[in-house]
Length: 325
Image (cartoon, rainbow, N blue to C red):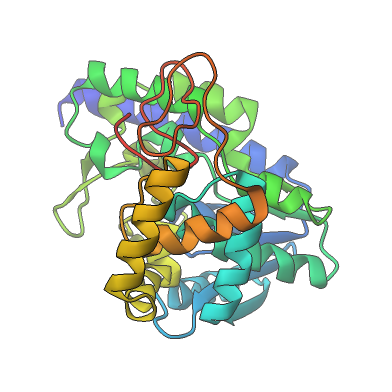
């Protein structure tokens, strides 16, 4: 890194760090959905000593890496930590709520949001009413791997698009049970700081592994606060961190090839819905049970996968998950 970039990185990390610290200081939450990844760990270390509740969920049949990291972070932050295992049945029941509230049978949406709903339910059952998440950090600071290879100018364009379309299921899911859900990263001061960071400072090399990583400026901002293996931890999506990536394999065994062929042909012919696999079929049947078949687009673009309206400027269908549209 050139001396110029070193100076720029120092200034940017100070700006980002101070904005996140101020946002967490303003946070009035009694609970945190804790994965033990970079984003929620930063919140935890900054909120250390507040005595908050923390909730970590995992799929009982194939727990992901979140549990061990989260236990360590919660212990160091002095949180009241609950680790909750969920069954396949718990997951499918939660998927029904996600399908209804989010109007979606997109597998990625379900796999990520069903565990969040389970965590939120446990927080609510404990009497919590204000819950924090780490949402928004990946969108603001280039946490997604598909962004890493982009040149600064095109990275900026991609991020600006994300800033316009980003949505987070925890907020509407929490609202269904009277929970107020918020993220320090979506605070106006943090977003303003992110907008002023040059894209070249968002992606860099992980000093522990040599791999390219996103959120580089955020990691540098809290490098002295968090343990190195946490501040440089590779991003694990919720589905990977909690183990719900194993669910498709379970569904593969539960739905026969013949059943999939019969039902997918039927739904394509009768409802214009193109199902991409057995998991998609299961979620679609959950979706249509609570919402009915997708509403077809009137004016504007329609999704080739399900016929739903696709917002102008978007190349992704939030209903069925078709991409690119």
